[in-house]
Image 1 (tube, rainbow, N blue to C red):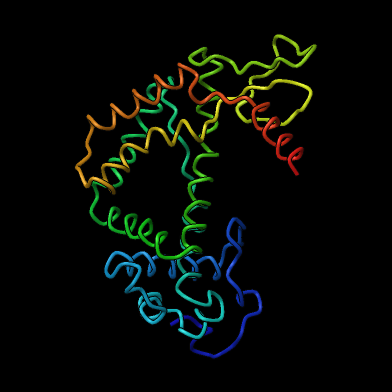
Image 2: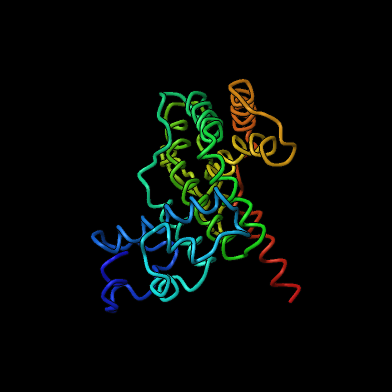
Length: 258
């Protein structure tokens, strides 16, 4: 058990779990969170979300049950923080020198992560939990949103290399050599285009997740290469290029209706 469990002392800095998306300092608090996260993943792997209990996490993390209830409140809080902590890792998207290689590497990462039974079990359980708990679903969305944000550099590099067309900016007087945008900006007086990096990355993993979780079909290198090739072809065809004036027009229409 941890020191606070053995002594019964309260530590004000540890009284509440960090809100999703925040960063906490290292030291004993970080070690406690890591131990709890590991226990949550172990419990999900062994019993799934329906069988995960605070008592199990207490036994396998060495953190007293009363501390878990005080900081995380319930199983949903434990799961949400485990996902938030997973999002604080140092993962970076691949940099192979080409967009084709980067997308292929991403697809192979997905396949490899579910080829390892231990990793696949906990990952599958996390996804399944999102169907049973809205708080878990929100944490899962936050986790992947962070991943997609990190992948914006893939699009930026591809535009600089000339592998994707630079997003056009039709604003009057815009310089021809203005930096390429990879995120939409709202401007009612101009037409701005951007490449949605998140949508591009999702299109790589989507068919693989479909096979894994919907049709329950095996995935391997061939499926990974196919998913990457399809996403690349779609990107080159402009499938992920957005026009911010579409959203502006929709917003104006709603405003008029009201």
